[in-house]
Length: 423
Image (cartoon, rainbow, N blue to C red; front, top):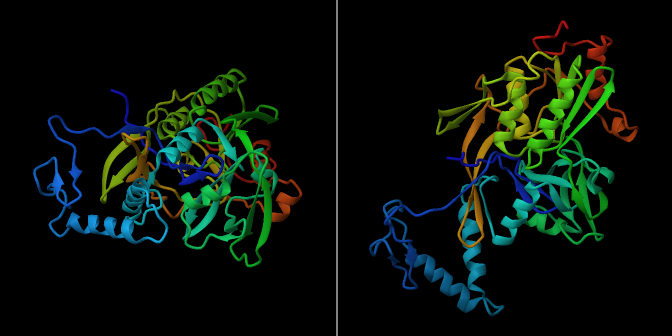
């Protein structure tokens, strides 16, 4: 029986297709138990289909008649007519998901659900950045490489305070995505606050485009050093990473730099498989629900990088599945982590298709590192802290990558973790 998909992105709604990146492994669909009749609420407020009263999982203090009274009042009295029933219906579904106050539990109308799935395929239409809610503000989780957002200078951690003149105060991620998305060749202006003490807002105008993201890239920045950049953990990542692993192993490298900077996450099973190339079938993560460890996932990779000294690069845009891989390698001392504290997306979502093409993404658990460290809302601390400043960006310098290369060359302090570190 195939594994039920779990999601865990960093609530990264790719501004391109408006996807809620929060998927860590898959998806399921709603099915009725054998012999059960679907629940139907009549216009009179009674519940039919399972007797004439609300099912047992609804508490006694909930009276559905009030819901239908509200429905009727809105339809009869709202000043703009006609009021579409489907708009009320989907609005109620959206509100029900939002009632938990969890930014990662979300209802998708059919078009939004289709956009979400399209984005996971690696092809998007928009500016090329993921956003999320952080401390109640619409925040750039990561710009994707070689996209309009990155070329316009958008950075992880930038706070969007307005979109083409519309304030984002109190705005949902869905709404922000809908404003940022648009036709290829059209422009959107983001008003940005940057830095922990950012006070001065500035505008960035970006031309939207069709974007196809390469999930994994391989470079050789120094002799015998493989630089593997993983952009996200989507449908294309598994095959491309397998190709890269084979190519790297064939060249018997002295060291590996795994670059997970600005990686918003993706499918959980891909993260578990990737981590397994360093830790074998050891524990990659643990899931905790209602204060109890309910499951632990073991690496499914073939441990082909287990004896190769490795450095992992992370920053504020490394989230979810990227944090899972980083945390697992750090706990097992299979890699040294260099960069800045990660985003802090440590919850697990299940993505469930509904029969009309809509879908719901619901947080079902939080994940912990193998040593049971929590990362949700706190992030992962690197072993070696190296910042990349505004001046570095402006002058196209990369001190984080330079530090990793210096460690391998013996010209910088620090050690690349791995069982072959003395190799």
